Image (tube, each protein chain N blue to C red):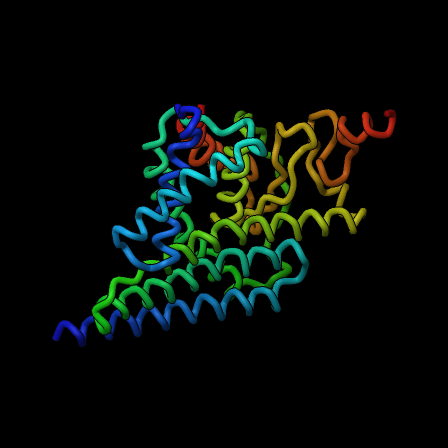
Length: 128
Length: 163
């Protein structure tokens, strides 16, 4: 009975994970411009991968009787790398598309946005 | 916090935990090996990391993590709905500026990462002097509300964690 419930739970988590991964990839293809496209893979995939990893931990604990927790590490690395990747893609996009700059809110600081404006360090380096 | 031979006690514990997770095995041998790595690595790297983050109240990390995990689940469902049921052109996307009160580089990094992982927002850039963060919203009709939500929910909690 227990094994049956565990199997049901694992199967459910696998389906949920696969669904969110599919939505993430679908959004990447469907949304019209780069900045909107970034939203789908950075978010929908975290829950998708998360559900798959929980399913994996449940499987090893309940079916194989082994304690497995390096899945937590995969989650941790994903949470560190996904925002950094998105941030760098966004920065590269802002740099390569000057027509976007009129949509940006006023930075209200000296030096402008880090990607576009000259930072004080840059100026100093040129003067030196 | 920290002495000459144990400059970052929390990092030491994190390294030991990550080592045991990598080995996927909780045993005395791995715990000792992890602790040795946790003692040696901070000593070898401390020259490259002079301004270590100082914690004011590290236990609030638990509270922060739970809030963020909950928001990630909600954000996934919300973004999935927008992707599936809305025409891409009809999404009211825009850039907003979030002024920062945080000054600690590590805290700002965590805030930027959190913004990317949570509902309908992506951190796209920082201002050159590090006083504001550029955020792209997927769907919003209330940019100020979004900014206030980010400041209330995440920045306030991070300010309690970091000194």
